[in-house]
Length: 391
Length: 199
Image 1 (cartoon, rainbow over the protein chains, first blue to last red):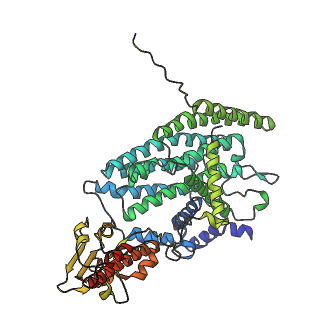
Image 2: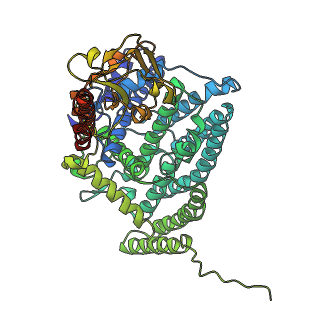
Image 3: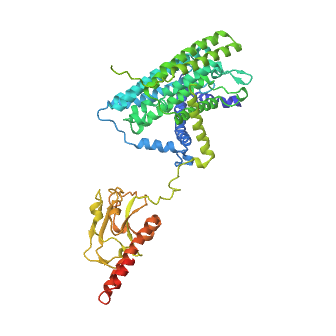
């Protein structure tokens, strides 16, 4: 029974596909999977927008939206109707084609990333051997759409926001990739389902998630920081900082094009949360071995929502960074630490099982963290000013 | 250590998040259309014309002197003086406005009309829900819409209204004493200064 519920979507797909001639079955199965992704994640997006607004409100001792429907949960419907009925303004001097294409390119590339994510047991749309590589390639393509939006709008705020976005995304792409490389070194595969399979083992009741190892914890934190920066979320929301740049690269977008940007941003958040879950939190595997009877897709989406709520929590807490702080943090702290973590991961791999590698790897990482914190973020103290006058 | 402040901040917002569900005192928001906080006594939104008694046309204090019309910085007051006269609160014959319009869309709530009015006839209202779907006629308030009773004035600005009432009563008494003195003058000129001095 539990196995049936676990595989219910796969069974449903096979049942539908079974009615078709053999040569169409593969294509029809893929189309069904795509339809599933196109329905589930935008639905999750609608839910997240209202949860985010309510959560942020509570963090600021407000109530948040509570007018539309019970507890305000139909707010996304009202927002959607508003976005659809708004006037679609294209600036006179804008490059109309690029301006039109940018939000589409963003949403399409972000959706592509979901193709390789295993959302449950046997539930990856494409089990690609180099799925991780494909995911990062698609993630990098979102930068293109953001620069398209900024450049084609012909607006100084848009172009400034786009330049900031590209600089920030390229800077944080590096530590993100390095933290994923650490996982690849241990799992020995670029395929996301096999990375999950490598973590789906238990010692007693406890899982072998990579987050619960010293190197995996460090890599997970780096991945989380980089994911926030990649999705342009607060505190790294410089590309669209409304107090500085109106709205950054989507200043000149209105109506449904703006809604598409909004959708793309949240979908990027989901896909990166999904990747983080896959790489460090054991994907669809249960947190304790005795909870394995709960369907795998519930675990995956549960973990994704937990990561999303951490995103929201961060947004409700931290103020925005300055551009130089952002760059310093990326290149002088996160990147060296990610490189060190690669070394520690290699040590972990070759020290073999035993308690020594736990102590040694943790020690190296903690000492490095404290030392880099002391040295890299030390505030330069200026003494009393001394004057030397001409004789 | 690095990151300590971040954790402190996260703990603070988490405390707010949980606390807002536990204790209602934390929530600072007033759920406006359903519940509302009483307007402050010093609030001022838009002028209105005060009238005494129950009939607004008879009791209107305004004498159409047009000082407010001239002083109004955005020129949103339009007054037309009457040809005939009617008695004011003292009993003296005065002009009255046959037309007194204030354009809500132009008024900037500066209260200068109230400051300059020598007859305590125009005061500031605290009513703020003045939105209308008729942007031409609905935003021009005529004298009937502007006229509000002295009791209403007492209900929104009690302190200020009592002061105004005291001042008006004093003036009325002074005028009456003067009239009495004028009436008594041909007979006995002596008591008149004494009566004036007492008031």
